[in-house]
Amino acid sequence: MNRDRRVLDDRYELRTRLGAGAMGQVWQAYDRELGRPVAVKLMHPHHFAAGGDRVAIDELIERFRREARLVARFRHPGLPVLYDARLGPDSEHIYMVMELVLGGTLESVLRRGHPLPEAQVVDIALQLCDILAHTHALPVIHRDLKPANIMVSPSGRITVLDFGVAATYKGAARTRQRLTRHRQVLGTVGYLAPEQVVQSGLIVPQTDLYAMGCILYELLTGEPPFTDELSAVLYESPVPLAMLRPEVHPTLQTVIAETLAKRQDERPPSARAVHDRLLPLQPGVGSTPAPSVSASGHSSGSVPLSERFGHAQALFDDGDLGQALPAYTALAAELRSAGPQHADQEAQCRARVAHCRMGLGDLHDALKQFRALADELTPIRPSNDPLLLEVRLHAGALLVTLDDFAAATIELSDLHQLLLSLPREQYHHELMVVSQYLDRIRRGYAG
Image (cartoon, one colour):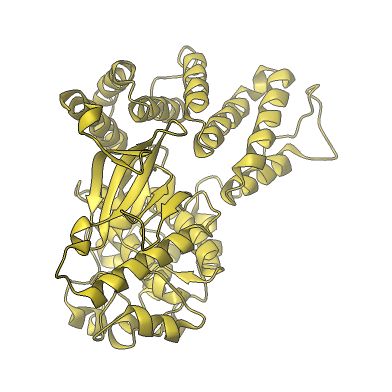
């Protein structure tokens, strides 16, 4: 089977095509040198065919290079990690090698035809705001934020992909002149802000906030706020959320309505401002923190446990997994020695440790830790416990990624039977993810 697989530069083995667009293809691939799964974004070979529009081809190549250079600057868990790239004119292929993000797109979630619960939409909104706050500080505007470019992991973590038409908004005039021709509109109609249609050079952070508002509206209602006609983007107003989902919190309704304002100056000032307004809607915010403990189980007056958790979480959210890993590891060890009353917090820290391992590319160790945690939680927690389901999903997904199809089939088939026995409306997302991985296993065996 491996002999038939395409290999780039005797290193990156292209295995499964995950998607394709106007610029290129995205493949699930395998790095033979480092022995790990990766994602490869490859420019379409037909762009280099003889007789093509050389100016258009050069523009696409330059945009591809710019995307790679932008992605290389990212340091956030909600953005892809760039491992390698071949961008020179002498390369046989032009491609970039990135972290393989597990899960499905928000577009696939919307295709199920069920509006999402408000709490889930708030969680997605908070994550998107945090990601956009990071990119806007660089300063980079995505310009094509849409459900198809947002991945959701089995645990619910969001990753924003495809910065192919992104732009830096300081000094944008020179960039615009080089990379757009014939008043080309960049982006996807339906998620375009009005300024992208009538004044394409005037892109600011509020341009991405508008697209985010479109996405949140669609997640809540099942329908986009505007049709795919440019006139609707410019002149129409969406049906108020209060008419479609009257039970949604007024703050969320107001924030989404403000992000969809036609004028930039009427939208929220920043992604961070939106985040701060929505944060009180997140379940659990404002609740009393757990008492802090030391290794002996006594209260720690110097460094409260809640602060240490917050510090570890900040490191994790900033993408500093190398420092978040020892922070969570130390917390887990301390909580274990503090006694069984802290078992829940210990389990959460151990899950974070495995997440960090996975994010740092140590997939085998991450799998080992997820499975060990699942084995410990299974006898003492109900089968539908959220953390247990999350850990089992990650373990199964990693088994598929590592091509251990036999073990993955056992784990995911058992999980699939469990999810079928649970309320479908509550666990439909998990069931969809498990079904997709089982289908990938079947295709892997068939290949």
